[in-house]
Amino acid sequence: MSEENGAETLGTVLIAQREPQDQQFVQVLLSTFGKFNVVEANSSAGVIRGLFAQPDLILVDPLIRGDFLRAVELMRRMPKLNHVAIVGLSGDLSQAARVSGKGFNAFISKPFKPESLLAQVWKTLDSQPLPPGDGSPVELNVDIDQIEGLPTLPTVYAQVEQLCADPHVDAEELAKVIETDPSITMKLLKLSNSAFFGFTREIKSIGDAVSLLGNETVKNAVLSISVFEATKDMEDSAGIDRKMFWQHATAVGSAVRFIAKKMKIQREESFTAGILHDIGKIVLDGLFAEFYKGTLEAVESEKQSILEAEERTIGLTHTKLGHELSESWGIPGGLSNAILYHHRPKSSDSDAELASLVHIADACARNLGFGSGGDPYVPTIQPFAMEHLAVGGNDLMVWEEEMKQVIEKDMAFLSAIA
Ligand SMILES: [Fe+2]
Ligand SMILES: [Fe+2]
Image (cartoon, rainbow, N blue to C red; front, side, top):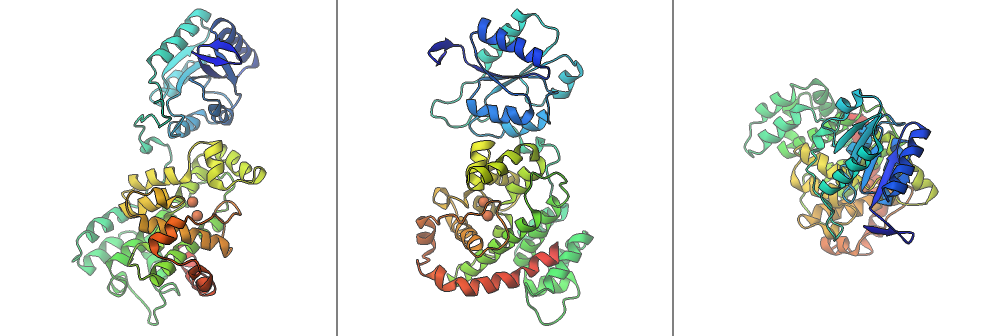
């Protein structure tokens, strides 16, 4: 029971029906006879917005405007809102089969008896786990792999990763595995011969590249190329400029590598950390375009950073989604951790080093104007990150010009892999 506008209600129900007369009927039924507080939406994006009214249950026709099954994939990942029950209500019986196994709690077909609808709503609410009082998320164990069309890494990456677990892996063996993927082979050769590595003699084969660059560098290059390959064919977009996005990612990678070198921090994966750090944005932009549009609009209209706008419009950040994705891809823990904590390295319980490097590099790349991270703002650097890496307040200013030149040179990475 809760108090809404002074009246006692049995909870909040978000209704989204296709036909206005159905919407009105259900609204009256639930508010007058059911004593529920009712919130209304008329599209899938509207349901996502309506979640911020913290409904206890959604009563929806899956055929409302937009892709409602996508909306379910999204809301099941929202840490604070994923406990909301979903009941399907539709006159199209085939919808019951379509939504089965997609996270719906129940399905009612039309026509229905008003009392059975109310009974189903009560029953569903009764059996729904309550969110913990402290506001922490309800773990529903919804596997990220269930998201339709989720990018997958080329299989060669997992093989390379496995081989490189043995530090004495034979260069020839490693080369042989990479060569099974022609597209990655071509890009790796192009990259090896680019200004990014700056060798004077021509590298003619992958075997050559492995012996010159070393296993770890090759492994990280294969990972960066693989992630680019995996995400490049997503057709839909909410409006993130992909070219500017990859310029930002490359600049951050370059800046991470630059700062690590200056501070004598040995991190072979430093560049790759920059390439991967915002990968969640590409998935939100590509797969959840219908909902991410509102996020990008909020960046403009509310003058919010993209991270804040994500929290306030879809309740799911690129850091959380990117982290989940990187885990499902089997990406090493340090990188995965940097993806999750690059905006708040202080919260990182392990490997705050790489998260801090990416955090500072992100601000530097934005400050120098390379590409776009999805909003025009330069974030404030957390003092923790500076202290953790022992970077002095003046260092970044002193390094600025040199860093800019290094980033410009490292843009060769992008021309080689794009
Ligand atoms: Fe970010
Ligand atoms: Fe970024």
